[in-house]
Image (cartoon, rainbow, N blue to C red; front, top):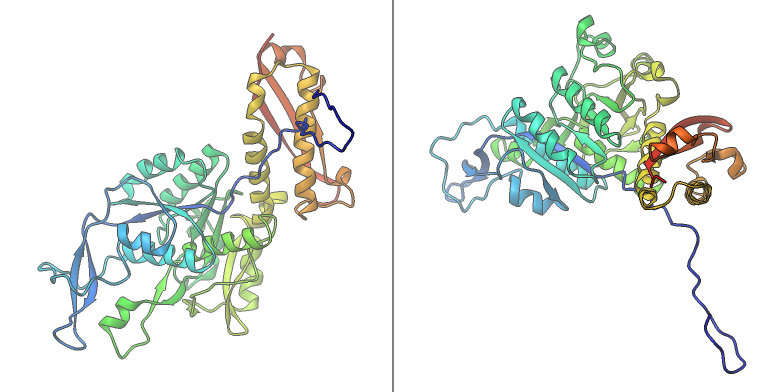
Length: 414
């Protein structure tokens, strides 16, 4: 303690006994798109008014993830929606624009347009490279959302969901088909002659696709409206980010306008919604002149019980990952009752802030959560293994109805 030599008021900085736990980011997606090694972009032909040409663009190597923080940066690496008119025309141009590049480009554009701030993008040449792309994402901890814009292959969706399960901190945004003549196929898995992904609480599925303005389409058909039907997953990732930033991850990403969307590929009625929503088909609808996300269910809907809502599942992912990362310091501490008390204080302080933000139900903190780290859940046999276990209950669904998960860290053994 310092020695004071004269009367007066002195201020001392006293270290806090609580090691603050910071909330992790919940709105950084990883996008995977099928883009060939060379693409042809539509560009103006400046020497002939009203005509177009194709120009070459070479994207970065496949299977390598790049951090993208704005649309301009994306166009530098992966190409714009239209080509540079100052470049020479491509000799072997194919009038059919690569749909994989269109889907990826519009997804990333829609992400930033709807409130996203940063994302990771990796291109693959075909679906056989998906495993390598997911492996690249596995090494990037900040990613919390995964999307494969326009890729509706069932085996590919399964791999993306398996990736989310393996990492334990990610949620997949999946595209449904562009249209469906028989809406009942949307509620059946492929094994039952349907198109719905297998039931999982780590993914959401959206239908139908959306209509956006595409400058390349407008260049090719100046008399048309320039519209193009694109998958919605990129735009929805932006909606997730916008809602997370404005309200928090605990707010359902529904009843939200999709910026940039002009229409949907297939209108849906309230009766259609009533049939699809309980099964976990999140509808995109035109309501009062706006294109709105009108569903917030995980794939499988009511069959997922407490985890049937996107915001509940993502809130649990947020809490688990934040607490896991915020308690890594225990590996350097002796596994004693003093450590258990400190863990309880730190986690309780974090959850109190989460409760105050409105993420947890309850009139008091005691109704909203509990933290248990004591001799009962840390018996001698676990301590001998160097493990310290904390049980945490949080009231996300309704007050006093706790969804329980356990956090286990390796502490110093005696």
